[in-house]
Length: 297
Image (cartoon, rainbow, N blue to C red; front, side, top):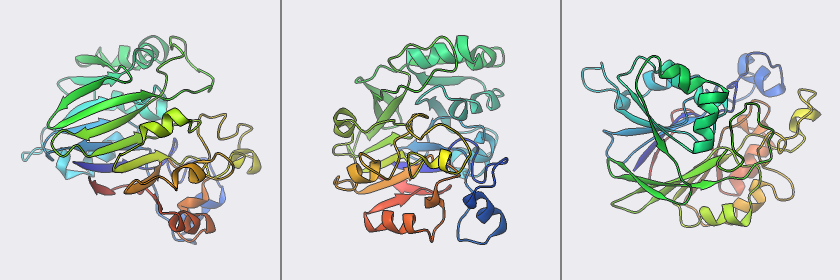
């Protein structure tokens, strides 16, 4: 099984257009070792012929163009089979509208996410006016054969983040995915949004080979301390990396071959290659995703 990190940043990308935090200034000026990143999404395949997209960010056009394996030999058709959604956030779904020129689209989403995208944001309602859309209901705990040698099992990720749009039930608002190669039985877990690493969530990570995990903020008070927002990391639905019950404390002991932070906010100092926070992650065996990273699992 192969996975390609198409985008590794949180909403707004890195740098974010309206931000002058230390990290955004550094990447613009080149004063510190760091690289730009687009908004998060990954593609997964068991045969490098059929690819499945996890979340469709607003940067999807550049994601597809930057990855030749997604294109057929004649370059006219993509090998994209379906899109699997972790939630209904605009950063993860606006790209659906940008692939409306296709012959049709298969979307895997929970009932809650589907309702939000249909009656709340209206993204799927609009998309259906341009191309056929097939909805595949995602039921947490149920294994689903994707085809091409892949299967997935979604798991519920509880959140108290305030809903912006009507139409969403509480359960199934956010999910993670365990994606398994049906031949090797090796698994990848994709979990870009998680508010708290509860025992149930940690159990879902057991025995996976590779983990791509929420790395939005370093500290819970990151945004307020920079004067950029009043909400904490947890308020926004993301467990911080540092601090008590932070992801570093809970994940570093886990026996997983590769543990990689993704969905990284522009304010997070781990974006700077030479930051103390980045060096601390390395000492604990944690990696930081970058656009274009390819993983063989």
